[in-house]
Length: 199
Ligand code: MAN
Ligand code: CA
Image 1 (tube, rainbow, N blue to C red):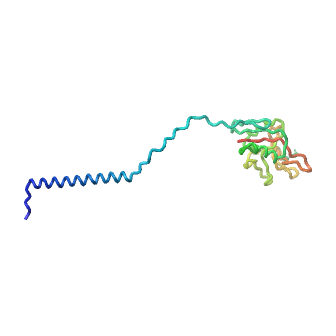
Image 2 (image 1 turned 30 degrees about the horizontal axis):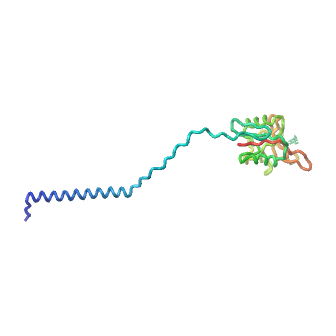
Image 3 (image 1 turned 180 degrees about the vertical axis):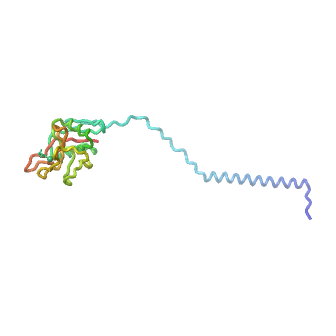
C-alpha cells in the first residue's frame, strides 16, 4: 500500500532535495577549481631582457706590422711583408708572435697570390708552405694542404734533396720555387724575406 503524501509535504521534500543537489554541485565545482589551482603550473613572468642597442659590426684590428702590408679586400686578411731575410723557423716565430690567427702566409687563390706578389715587389720571400714532414706533400703553416699550384716551370725539384720550403718570386709575377728552409754548412741559401698573414 503506497504511503499517501500530502501535496504540501511533497513540495517541501522536493525543495530540500534540490537544495542538496545544488549544494553538492556547488561543492564539486569548487573542489575542481581548487584542484586546478593546486596543480596548474603557470610559469612566472620571465625577467624582461631589453634588446641590445643597435651597433655597427665590430671592425677588425688595423693591419699593421712588417715593413709593408696589404689587406685583401675579398677576405679581409692582412698580409705583412718582412724584408729582413731569416731561416723559415725564425720567420715562422715572428709571425706566430703576432697573435693566434697569424701564420706564415698561405695562398688559396690566384688573386691572393697576385696581391702578395705586388706586396713584395721584385724580392723573393718565404710563404708558409713546407714538405719537411712528408717529402712531396706540402702543407701551409696554418695546417691546411697546399691546393693551389703556382709552381715555376720544373718546380718543385727538391734540388740537392734539400728544398722543403716555398718561396714566392716577385720578379716572376709570383711564381713559386722550393728552396732550402735554412742555410747549412755547405750552402748559404735558406734565409729569405717572408710574408705573415693574419686572418
Ligand atoms: C735554381 C733551380 C731551383 C732551385 C734553385 C736553388 O733556380 O734549380 O729549383 O731551387 O736553383 O738555388
Ligand atoms: Ca727548387
